[in-house]
Image (cartoon, rainbow, N blue to C red; front, side, top):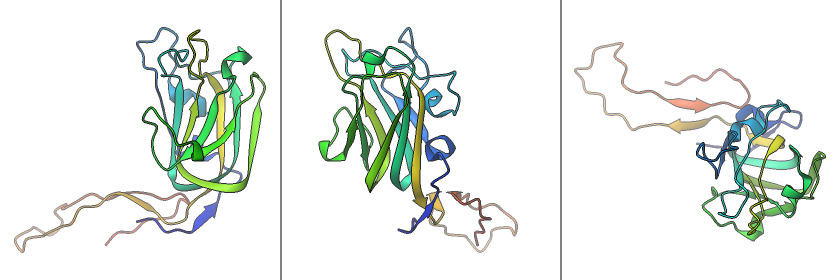
Length: 193
């Protein structure tokens, strides 16, 4: 259950606060650093993917669904050229090896400086994807010190799991019959009856 109204969180980095980061490269890659480092609000850490020859140079942040994004801030670790032609997408679908070019927000510059992306026509999506260029030189790593996302999130709690219940007349009072998991982006008290 998610209402269509969203709450303004323009001063909160929703990627850091509520995002879940994944990437195409795992621990088997020698220079691997976890995807979560890109959104940990600590510029002394970074994520690190492979160079792109195999297409595994992507980073994805799962955001509260739906999030209306109007600003993204990125900062590359070093080696400015590695970010050349990397693309940023906001999609309702997770990355599966291909992206819908209609979800493209911008193409990044080859710089180690902070890049601020203001989205004039606020775009909604569930997944922010940074996809590095694929090339035979294998030198288009995604390694970000910072990835921040600002926008609006769902105003209503999002129930992660809810099962239909059939409680028999013989159940003991006080017996747990289910667990409900919900996320409330405004830190309200949740009551379930």
